Length: 76
Image 1 (cartoon, rainbow, N blue to C red):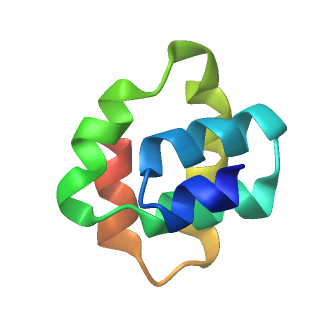
Image 2: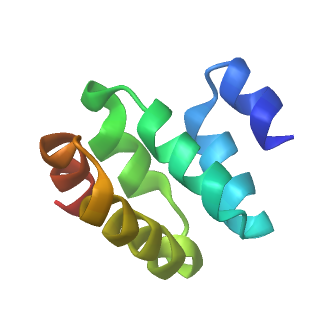
């Protein structure tokens, strides 16, 4: 379901589904699929109960990803 939502460019839905499933690779794929201009709106729409898991995935990405500026947008 998350992959289908991602293909349909339903980034918020895909991200929430991936966090619910607790699929680390899928969560990261969904984070990186979000357009930089949509990050703040999507981040603000994530339900509070999923924030910790999302931040854990972002922290892991920060360790190894060349997308530092993009990931820092998520942190804001």
